Each structure stands twice: as C-alpha cells, then as structure tokens.
Image (tube, rainbow, N blue to C red; front, side, top):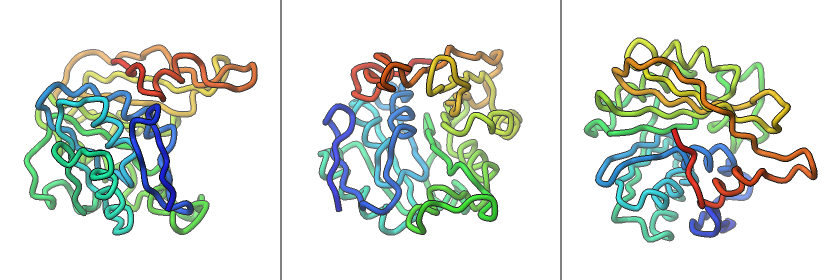
Length: 242
C-alpha cells in the first residue's frame, strides 16, 4: 500500500500501487460538489474514496454515502474514512450499480455524483491491468449508471457526472426523460485544444434551458503546468462553480 495526499495535503488516501488510483477526474468531481449543510450526497463506484473524501472535506456540514462493489476497494475506502477522521459524516457500503439503487435499501439523496467507467465494450479496449478493469469497464454501460442515479436522487436533487466529451449526447439522452436544467462544463487540456472531458449537472424534474458553461482549461502551453484556476481547484483553494 501507499499513502498519498490530495486536496493540498488535506486528504490522506491509502491505496494499492497497482490498482485504480483516483486522479484528475476525481478531484474535479469533488470540486463540483455544492451540497448545503445537512444535505445527503451519494457517490456510487467510490473506489478508495478519492472524490468522496475530498468532497466531504470541502463540504464540512454535509453527509456523504459511498457505494463500492469491489471488496478490496470497499475495505480501503472504509480505512480512508477513519484515517481522515470522517466517520461521523461519511459512510460506505458494498453495492453494485448493476443491481440498481433500490437494492441498497437507502432513502433517496439530495445529490448524486459519479465518475462512471469510460468504456463498456471489453473488445474495444483493454484496461491497463486486471486490477483496473472494474474502473475502466462498465458492465451495463451508461444506461445502468444513469438509471441508478435517477432513482437515487429526490425530485429537485442534482446529478453530476464526469465523463468523456464524446459521450455527452448519450448522457443527455439517457437523463432527459426524468431530468433537465442541464449545465455542461467542458474540460480541455489546453486553451486551443478540444475538450476531452465534460462535467454534466442535471436536476431531476428540472425544466430550465441547457447551459454550456465556459471550459475549464487544465494546462498552459508553456511547460505544460496547470493553469492557475486548475491548480487552485486541485489544491482545494476554490470550487468549480455551477
């Protein structure tokens, strides 16, 4: 195991060196969390807790629930909750998105945030290692994840997903029957490069027009360092607002 620090050193994460390790996507997802005091936030597929614990640290008055199907990751995220002194506000349980939200036996949440696996065809792409396959490959594809999220959130609650930019049309189509008021934040590697990621926020039963927000640019061309905005977000000095 290694122990790493994220969010400017405020969050400690124990994780396996050869398993899936949360990175930029988890950090950005946590930065989008705007839960109000007392609200309940769910993260399905929380892994070892990269986004879950960073969001809980950012939002110190909200309550968080993680769900993870992998035994090793579920054990690690429970350790990480204790390691960061968050057991009073963060809970974790075993569960599988494929089984649906109702199988968890939980009441609906005020917000759901998720980083669904980016691929659903194992013949098209192989994960870098078997230990990472569950994080890269979605057995039920985006359909299973969006269905889970729609069931998990109350009317008027929010669903936030970070995913590949080329899947944005699919995400909107899958959420649209029961959600709206979409806000889309492209995430581009450079100011003059196409976005590779999108962060999509939807409100269950929302009716407002779709809004395409200014992109978040991650790197400067000079040296490839993070932009000032990206660095501030990753260090937890500012949020990624909606």
